Length: 156
Image 1: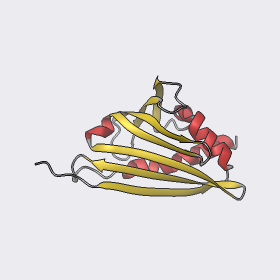
Image 2: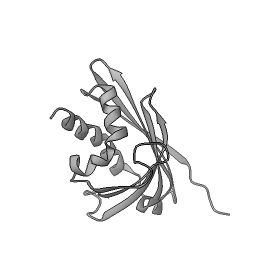
Image 3: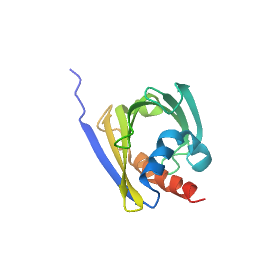
Image 4: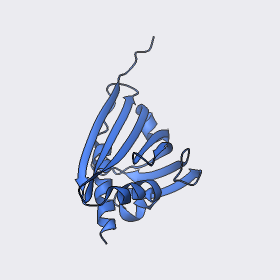
């Protein structure tokens, strides 16, 4: 009988000067602009199903994680939650290289207003194929930098 691997949850939180409504709009409606805004990591974004912004949409990302390897990777993610009232989105990996080491990889992002800026909370829920598979630390760093890149883009 195959052994089950535990589900892990990691939270990353950052404060930024961009207002919450604007940051949420960038994450919800302009995420496919990442190859333009964050080209050192994201090489391409394709919408495979839907409009790329609404529930059920599937996007394919081509990206590189430089400090682990310079291998070009792909991942397909599906928008599985859109909650405009709470400014929350959930993206679930449904295909690609990440599923070689993870049975499940979901990312939930919530944007809350704080003063004139906002707090961006990333919740990463994952289950490894094997407990010896690598921890997704490089992805945590990427997620933590996405909002910083959007903030720079917002202030241009």
